Image (tube, rainbow, N blue to C red; front, side, top):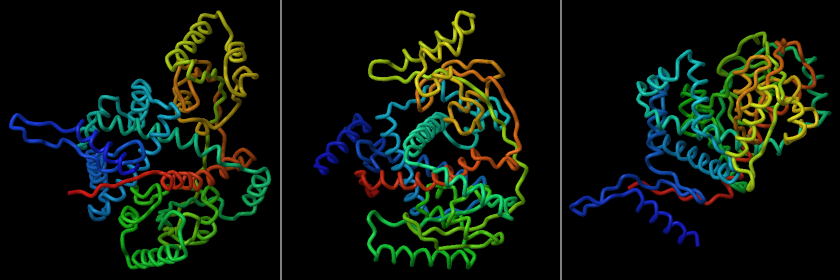
Length: 431
Protein backbone atom coordinates (compact mmCIF):
# COMPACT_ATOMS: atom_id res chain seq x y z
CA UNK A 1 0.00 0.00 0.00
CA UNK A 2 2.82 2.42 0.86
CA UNK A 3 4.51 1.73 -2.50
CA UNK A 4 1.21 2.31 -4.31
CA UNK A 5 0.65 5.56 -2.39
CA UNK A 6 4.19 6.68 -3.17
CA UNK A 7 3.77 5.91 -6.87
CA UNK A 8 0.44 7.72 -7.15
CA UNK A 9 1.66 10.78 -5.23
CA UNK A 10 4.86 11.14 -7.22
CA UNK A 11 2.96 10.76 -10.51
CA UNK A 12 0.45 13.43 -9.47
CA UNK A 13 3.06 15.92 -8.32
CA UNK A 14 5.32 15.44 -11.29
CA UNK A 15 2.37 15.90 -13.65
CA UNK A 16 1.44 19.13 -11.90
CA UNK A 17 4.90 20.67 -12.01
CA UNK A 18 6.22 19.75 -15.44
CA UNK A 19 5.48 21.12 -18.93
CA UNK A 20 6.08 19.94 -22.47
CA UNK A 21 7.63 22.20 -25.10
CA UNK A 22 6.37 22.45 -28.67
CA UNK A 23 9.13 20.05 -29.62
CA UNK A 24 7.54 17.53 -27.20
CA UNK A 25 10.62 17.74 -25.00
CA UNK A 26 9.68 17.47 -21.29
CA UNK A 27 11.16 20.17 -19.06
CA UNK A 28 11.15 19.50 -15.35
CA UNK A 29 10.22 22.61 -13.35
CA UNK A 30 10.43 20.99 -9.95
CA UNK A 31 10.62 17.57 -8.39
CA UNK A 32 9.70 15.76 -5.20
CA UNK A 33 12.55 15.55 -2.69
CA UNK A 34 10.68 13.85 0.16
CA UNK A 35 7.27 12.30 0.77
CA UNK A 36 6.08 13.09 4.30
CA UNK A 37 2.85 11.29 5.22
CA UNK A 38 0.17 13.02 3.09
CA UNK A 39 2.49 15.81 1.94
CA UNK A 40 5.67 16.38 -0.01
CA UNK A 41 8.82 18.48 0.23
CA UNK A 42 9.86 19.84 -3.17
CA UNK A 43 13.42 20.19 -4.39
CA UNK A 44 12.84 23.94 -4.81
CA UNK A 45 12.06 24.21 -1.08
CA UNK A 46 15.30 22.44 -0.23
CA UNK A 47 17.29 24.74 -2.51
CA UNK A 48 15.61 27.88 -1.16
CA UNK A 49 16.40 27.01 2.46
CA UNK A 50 19.96 25.99 1.58
CA UNK A 51 20.50 29.35 -0.14
CA UNK A 52 19.00 31.24 2.81
CA UNK A 53 21.29 29.50 5.30
CA UNK A 54 24.33 30.11 3.13
CA UNK A 55 23.48 33.82 2.81
CA UNK A 56 23.01 34.14 6.58
CA UNK A 57 26.27 32.31 7.28
CA UNK A 58 28.12 34.55 4.83
CA UNK A 59 26.77 37.69 6.55
CA UNK A 60 27.87 36.36 9.97
CA UNK A 61 31.22 35.10 8.70
CA UNK A 62 30.24 31.64 9.93
CA UNK A 63 31.68 28.43 8.49
CA UNK A 64 29.38 25.73 7.16
CA UNK A 65 29.79 21.97 6.72
CA UNK A 66 29.84 20.33 3.31
CA UNK A 67 26.82 20.82 1.03
CA UNK A 68 25.95 17.14 1.54
CA UNK A 69 25.86 17.44 5.34
CA UNK A 70 24.00 20.75 5.20
CA UNK A 71 21.41 19.27 2.84
CA UNK A 72 20.72 16.45 5.34
CA UNK A 73 19.97 18.97 8.09
CA UNK A 74 17.85 21.14 5.79
CA UNK A 75 15.77 18.16 4.68
CA UNK A 76 15.39 17.13 8.31
CA UNK A 77 13.97 20.57 9.19
CA UNK A 78 11.63 20.60 6.19
CA UNK A 79 10.31 17.15 7.12
CA UNK A 80 9.56 18.41 10.63
CA UNK A 81 7.91 21.54 9.21
CA UNK A 82 5.77 19.44 6.88
CA UNK A 83 4.57 17.18 9.70
CA UNK A 84 3.71 20.15 11.92
CA UNK A 85 1.95 21.98 9.09
CA UNK A 86 -0.16 18.90 8.38
CA UNK A 87 -1.19 18.83 12.04
CA UNK A 88 -1.94 22.55 11.83
CA UNK A 89 -4.18 21.96 8.83
CA UNK A 90 -6.12 19.29 10.72
CA UNK A 91 -6.41 21.63 13.73
CA UNK A 92 -7.63 24.45 11.52
CA UNK A 93 -4.74 26.78 12.40
CA UNK A 94 -4.50 29.51 9.79
CA UNK A 95 -2.59 32.76 9.37
CA UNK A 96 -4.33 35.28 7.14
CA UNK A 97 -2.46 37.73 4.93
CA UNK A 98 -3.50 40.53 7.30
CA UNK A 99 -2.07 38.66 10.30
CA UNK A 100 1.10 37.92 8.37
CA UNK A 101 1.50 41.58 7.41
CA UNK A 102 1.07 42.57 11.08
CA UNK A 103 3.84 40.17 12.08
CA UNK A 104 6.15 41.43 9.33
CA UNK A 105 5.41 45.04 10.32
CA UNK A 106 6.43 44.23 13.90
CA UNK A 107 9.60 42.53 12.65
CA UNK A 108 10.37 45.68 10.65
CA UNK A 109 9.77 47.86 13.73
CA UNK A 110 12.24 45.74 15.70
CA UNK A 111 14.86 46.79 13.16
CA UNK A 112 13.55 50.39 13.17
CA UNK A 113 12.39 50.10 9.56
CA UNK A 114 9.13 50.63 7.73
CA UNK A 115 7.60 47.54 6.14
CA UNK A 116 8.67 48.73 2.69
CA UNK A 117 12.27 49.31 3.77
CA UNK A 118 12.22 45.91 5.48
CA UNK A 119 11.04 44.33 2.22
CA UNK A 120 13.83 46.07 0.29
CA UNK A 121 16.38 44.84 2.85
CA UNK A 122 15.22 41.23 2.38
CA UNK A 123 15.48 41.57 -1.38
CA UNK A 124 18.91 43.22 -1.21
CA UNK A 125 20.11 40.26 0.88
CA UNK A 126 19.35 38.04 -2.12
CA UNK A 127 16.08 36.54 -0.82
CA UNK A 128 12.79 36.38 -2.71
CA UNK A 129 10.38 38.42 -0.56
CA UNK A 130 7.26 36.41 -1.44
CA UNK A 131 9.02 33.20 -0.41
CA UNK A 132 10.25 34.93 2.75
CA UNK A 133 6.66 35.88 3.64
CA UNK A 134 5.53 32.28 3.25
CA UNK A 135 8.44 31.09 5.38
CA UNK A 136 7.32 33.47 8.15
CA UNK A 137 3.75 32.19 7.79
CA UNK A 138 5.03 28.63 8.19
CA UNK A 139 7.03 29.56 11.28
CA UNK A 140 4.00 31.23 12.90
CA UNK A 141 1.77 28.20 12.28
CA UNK A 142 4.51 25.82 13.36
CA UNK A 143 4.97 27.73 16.61
CA UNK A 144 1.25 27.76 17.39
CA UNK A 145 0.84 24.05 16.67
CA UNK A 146 3.92 23.12 18.74
CA UNK A 147 2.85 25.19 21.73
CA UNK A 148 -0.70 23.89 21.62
CA UNK A 149 0.45 20.27 21.32
CA UNK A 150 3.26 20.37 23.89
CA UNK A 151 1.61 22.47 26.61
CA UNK A 152 -0.94 19.79 27.44
CA UNK A 153 1.88 17.29 28.04
CA UNK A 154 3.53 19.37 30.78
CA UNK A 155 2.72 19.28 34.49
CA UNK A 156 4.53 21.34 37.11
CA UNK A 157 3.71 20.23 40.65
CA UNK A 158 3.42 22.63 43.61
CA UNK A 159 6.28 20.75 45.30
CA UNK A 160 8.57 21.41 42.31
CA UNK A 161 7.82 25.12 42.59
CA UNK A 162 8.53 25.12 46.33
CA UNK A 163 11.80 23.24 45.82
CA UNK A 164 12.98 25.64 43.13
CA UNK A 165 12.22 28.71 45.25
CA UNK A 166 14.28 27.21 48.09
CA UNK A 167 17.10 26.33 45.69
CA UNK A 168 17.18 29.84 44.23
CA UNK A 169 17.52 31.37 47.68
CA UNK A 170 20.52 29.14 48.44
CA UNK A 171 22.37 29.53 45.13
CA UNK A 172 25.42 31.73 44.95
CA UNK A 173 25.46 31.94 41.14
CA UNK A 174 21.96 33.32 40.66
CA UNK A 175 23.50 36.43 39.14
CA UNK A 176 25.25 34.58 36.29
CA UNK A 177 23.95 34.10 32.74
CA UNK A 178 25.32 31.53 30.32
CA UNK A 179 25.24 31.38 26.55
CA UNK A 180 25.41 27.71 25.59
CA UNK A 181 25.95 25.74 22.42
CA UNK A 182 24.31 22.31 22.19
CA UNK A 183 24.95 19.29 19.98
CA UNK A 184 22.66 16.27 20.24
CA UNK A 185 23.89 12.91 18.94
CA UNK A 186 20.47 11.32 18.53
CA UNK A 187 19.35 7.78 19.17
CA UNK A 188 17.33 6.12 16.39
CA UNK A 189 13.73 5.08 17.13
CA UNK A 190 13.59 2.25 19.69
CA UNK A 191 17.40 2.10 20.07
CA UNK A 192 19.19 -1.12 20.90
CA UNK A 193 22.21 -1.27 23.18
CA UNK A 194 24.42 -1.36 20.06
CA UNK A 195 22.72 1.83 18.80
CA UNK A 196 23.40 3.57 22.10
CA UNK A 197 27.02 2.39 22.14
CA UNK A 198 27.50 3.67 18.59
CA UNK A 199 25.99 7.05 19.53
CA UNK A 200 28.37 7.30 22.49
CA UNK A 201 31.36 6.61 20.20
CA UNK A 202 30.16 9.36 17.84
CA UNK A 203 29.66 11.76 20.75
CA UNK A 204 33.16 11.07 22.08
CA UNK A 205 34.58 11.69 18.61
CA UNK A 206 32.75 15.03 18.40
CA UNK A 207 34.11 16.04 21.82
CA UNK A 208 37.60 15.13 20.67
CA UNK A 209 37.23 17.28 17.55
CA UNK A 210 35.91 20.22 19.57
CA UNK A 211 38.70 20.02 22.14
CA UNK A 212 41.18 20.00 19.26
CA UNK A 213 39.82 23.31 18.01
CA UNK A 214 37.09 22.38 15.52
CA UNK A 215 34.34 24.95 14.98
CA UNK A 216 31.38 24.19 17.27
CA UNK A 217 28.69 25.80 15.10
CA UNK A 218 29.92 24.04 11.98
CA UNK A 219 29.83 20.62 13.68
CA UNK A 220 26.40 21.37 15.19
CA UNK A 221 24.98 22.20 11.76
CA UNK A 222 26.48 19.04 10.30
CA UNK A 223 25.86 16.55 13.10
CA UNK A 224 23.36 17.70 15.71
CA UNK A 225 19.91 16.18 15.97
CA UNK A 226 18.73 19.12 18.11
CA UNK A 227 15.99 21.47 16.95
CA UNK A 228 18.44 24.40 16.85
CA UNK A 229 21.07 22.62 14.74
CA UNK A 230 20.76 25.05 11.81
CA UNK A 231 21.48 27.93 14.23
CA UNK A 232 24.82 26.30 15.05
CA UNK A 233 23.39 24.79 18.22
CA UNK A 234 23.18 28.22 19.90
CA UNK A 235 20.71 28.16 22.83
CA UNK A 236 21.07 31.89 23.51
CA UNK A 237 21.51 33.60 26.87
CA UNK A 238 19.87 31.94 29.87
CA UNK A 239 20.15 32.19 33.61
CA UNK A 240 21.30 28.97 35.27
CA UNK A 241 17.79 28.46 36.69
CA UNK A 242 16.29 28.53 33.21
CA UNK A 243 18.47 25.72 31.88
CA UNK A 244 17.52 22.02 31.87
CA UNK A 245 18.59 20.51 35.20
CA UNK A 246 21.18 18.23 33.57
CA UNK A 247 22.86 21.23 31.94
CA UNK A 248 22.75 23.49 34.99
CA UNK A 249 24.40 20.80 37.13
CA UNK A 250 27.40 20.28 34.84
CA UNK A 251 28.08 23.94 33.94
CA UNK A 252 28.02 25.21 37.53
CA UNK A 253 31.44 26.69 38.23
CA UNK A 254 32.77 26.04 34.69
CA UNK A 255 34.43 28.77 32.64
CA UNK A 256 33.86 30.22 29.18
CA UNK A 257 34.96 27.84 26.42
CA UNK A 258 34.44 24.64 28.43
CA UNK A 259 33.27 21.58 26.45
CA UNK A 260 31.08 19.37 28.63
CA UNK A 261 29.45 15.97 28.13
CA UNK A 262 28.54 13.62 26.74
CA UNK A 263 25.33 13.72 28.80
CA UNK A 264 22.95 10.84 28.19
CA UNK A 265 19.23 11.70 27.90
CA UNK A 266 16.26 9.84 26.51
CA UNK A 267 16.94 11.37 23.08
CA UNK A 268 20.66 10.70 22.80
CA UNK A 269 23.95 12.16 24.02
CA UNK A 270 24.18 15.93 24.57
CA UNK A 271 27.39 17.92 24.24
CA UNK A 272 27.44 21.43 25.68
CA UNK A 273 29.85 24.31 25.14
CA UNK A 274 29.89 27.43 27.31
CA UNK A 275 30.11 30.02 24.55
CA UNK A 276 30.12 32.97 26.95
CA UNK A 277 29.40 33.95 30.56
CA UNK A 278 28.22 37.28 31.94
CA UNK A 279 26.96 38.78 35.15
CA UNK A 280 23.22 38.71 35.12
CA UNK A 281 21.64 41.97 34.02
CA UNK A 282 18.92 43.59 36.06
CA UNK A 283 15.84 42.11 34.51
CA UNK A 284 12.87 44.40 34.48
CA UNK A 285 9.74 42.83 33.09
CA UNK A 286 6.54 44.50 32.06
CA UNK A 287 3.30 42.97 33.18
CA UNK A 288 0.01 43.74 31.54
CA UNK A 289 -3.57 43.56 32.74
CA UNK A 290 -6.05 42.69 30.04
CA UNK A 291 -9.41 41.17 29.29
CA UNK A 292 -10.71 39.46 26.20
CA UNK A 293 -13.66 37.83 24.48
CA UNK A 294 -12.85 34.52 22.79
CA UNK A 295 -14.88 32.74 20.11
CA UNK A 296 -13.63 29.41 18.75
CA UNK A 297 -14.57 28.49 15.15
CA UNK A 298 -16.12 25.08 14.59
CA UNK A 299 -17.80 23.03 11.87
CA UNK A 300 -20.93 25.13 12.36
CA UNK A 301 -19.21 28.47 13.02
CA UNK A 302 -16.85 29.63 10.28
CA UNK A 303 -13.70 31.70 10.74
CA UNK A 304 -15.35 34.64 8.97
CA UNK A 305 -18.47 34.44 11.15
CA UNK A 306 -16.42 34.34 14.38
CA UNK A 307 -14.45 37.40 13.26
CA UNK A 308 -17.66 39.21 12.23
CA UNK A 309 -19.35 38.51 15.59
CA UNK A 310 -16.42 39.96 17.51
CA UNK A 311 -16.31 43.03 15.27
CA UNK A 312 -19.97 43.56 16.12
CA UNK A 313 -19.27 43.33 19.86
CA UNK A 314 -16.39 45.78 19.50
CA UNK A 315 -18.57 48.27 17.59
CA UNK A 316 -21.22 48.10 20.34
CA UNK A 317 -18.63 48.64 23.09
CA UNK A 318 -17.05 51.62 21.30
CA UNK A 319 -20.48 53.12 20.70
CA UNK A 320 -21.36 52.82 24.39
CA UNK A 321 -24.19 50.39 23.63
CA UNK A 322 -22.70 47.46 25.56
CA UNK A 323 -20.25 46.71 28.37
CA UNK A 324 -17.14 44.64 27.67
CA UNK A 325 -17.47 42.52 30.82
CA UNK A 326 -21.16 41.81 30.21
CA UNK A 327 -20.50 40.67 26.63
CA UNK A 328 -17.61 38.47 27.82
CA UNK A 329 -19.80 36.80 30.44
CA UNK A 330 -22.50 36.15 27.87
CA UNK A 331 -20.49 35.19 24.79
CA UNK A 332 -16.83 34.43 25.58
CA UNK A 333 -15.54 30.87 25.72
CA UNK A 334 -13.08 29.54 28.29
CA UNK A 335 -12.68 29.93 32.07
CA UNK A 336 -12.29 33.74 32.01
CA UNK A 337 -15.87 34.31 30.87
CA UNK A 338 -17.19 34.22 34.45
CA UNK A 339 -14.90 37.14 35.38
CA UNK A 340 -15.90 39.22 32.38
CA UNK A 341 -12.90 38.05 30.37
CA UNK A 342 -10.41 39.42 32.93
CA UNK A 343 -6.97 37.81 32.60
CA UNK A 344 -5.43 39.61 35.58
CA UNK A 345 -1.79 40.75 35.71
CA UNK A 346 0.58 38.61 33.63
CA UNK A 347 3.86 38.59 31.72
CA UNK A 348 2.67 39.25 28.13
CA UNK A 349 5.21 36.73 26.82
CA UNK A 350 3.31 33.97 28.61
CA UNK A 351 0.43 34.38 26.16
CA UNK A 352 0.02 33.01 22.66
CA UNK A 353 2.33 35.08 20.36
CA UNK A 354 -0.61 36.56 18.43
CA UNK A 355 -2.15 37.72 21.73
CA UNK A 356 1.20 39.10 22.91
CA UNK A 357 1.61 41.07 19.67
CA UNK A 358 -1.93 42.44 19.92
CA UNK A 359 -1.44 43.72 23.49
CA UNK A 360 1.90 45.29 22.57
CA UNK A 361 0.16 47.62 20.11
CA UNK A 362 -2.52 48.85 22.51
CA UNK A 363 -2.74 51.91 24.72
CA UNK A 364 -4.46 51.69 28.11
CA UNK A 365 -8.21 51.03 27.70
CA UNK A 366 -7.86 50.59 23.93
CA UNK A 367 -9.53 47.56 22.31
CA UNK A 368 -7.78 45.57 19.57
CA UNK A 369 -9.78 44.65 16.49
CA UNK A 370 -10.58 40.92 16.05
CA UNK A 371 -7.46 38.76 15.65
CA UNK A 372 -6.70 35.04 15.42
CA UNK A 373 -4.59 33.04 17.86
CA UNK A 374 -4.12 29.28 18.19
CA UNK A 375 -7.14 29.24 20.53
CA UNK A 376 -9.57 31.06 18.25
CA UNK A 377 -10.69 34.63 17.52
CA UNK A 378 -10.38 37.39 20.13
CA UNK A 379 -10.97 41.00 20.84
CA UNK A 380 -8.76 42.22 23.68
CA UNK A 381 -8.66 45.32 25.84
CA UNK A 382 -5.53 46.47 27.66
CA UNK A 383 -6.51 47.77 31.10
CA UNK A 384 -3.08 48.30 32.69
CA UNK A 385 0.73 48.09 32.45
CA UNK A 386 3.36 47.93 35.19
CA UNK A 387 7.11 47.26 35.41
CA UNK A 388 8.59 44.83 37.92
CA UNK A 389 12.14 43.93 38.91
CA UNK A 390 12.10 40.23 38.08
CA UNK A 391 15.58 39.69 39.52
CA UNK A 392 14.17 40.32 42.99
CA UNK A 393 10.71 38.92 42.48
CA UNK A 394 11.30 35.19 43.01
CA UNK A 395 7.70 34.29 43.63
CA UNK A 396 5.72 31.18 42.78
CA UNK A 397 4.69 32.49 39.40
CA UNK A 398 8.28 33.15 38.35
CA UNK A 399 9.43 29.75 39.61
CA UNK A 400 6.55 28.04 37.83
CA UNK A 401 7.47 29.76 34.53
CA UNK A 402 11.12 28.69 34.86
CA UNK A 403 10.10 25.06 35.48
CA UNK A 404 7.60 25.17 32.63
CA UNK A 405 10.22 26.53 30.21
CA UNK A 406 12.71 23.83 31.26
CA UNK A 407 10.17 21.10 30.61
CA UNK A 408 8.85 22.69 27.43
CA UNK A 409 12.22 22.44 25.67
CA UNK A 410 12.66 18.77 26.54
CA UNK A 411 9.04 17.86 25.86
CA UNK A 412 9.10 19.66 22.49
CA UNK A 413 12.03 17.50 21.42
CA UNK A 414 10.25 14.33 22.58
CA UNK A 415 7.02 15.33 20.84
CA UNK A 416 8.83 16.02 17.58
CA UNK A 417 10.70 12.71 17.81
CA UNK A 418 7.41 10.86 18.30
CA UNK A 419 5.98 12.59 15.22
CA UNK A 420 8.97 11.49 13.16
CA UNK A 421 8.92 7.94 14.51
CA UNK A 422 5.24 7.52 13.58
CA UNK A 423 5.44 9.24 10.19
CA UNK A 424 5.87 7.77 6.73
CA UNK A 425 8.96 9.49 5.29
CA UNK A 426 10.59 8.62 1.96
CA UNK A 427 13.63 10.68 0.93
CA UNK A 428 14.43 10.52 -2.79
CA UNK A 429 18.04 10.35 -3.88
CA UNK A 430 19.12 13.09 -6.27
CA UNK A 431 20.00 12.09 -9.82
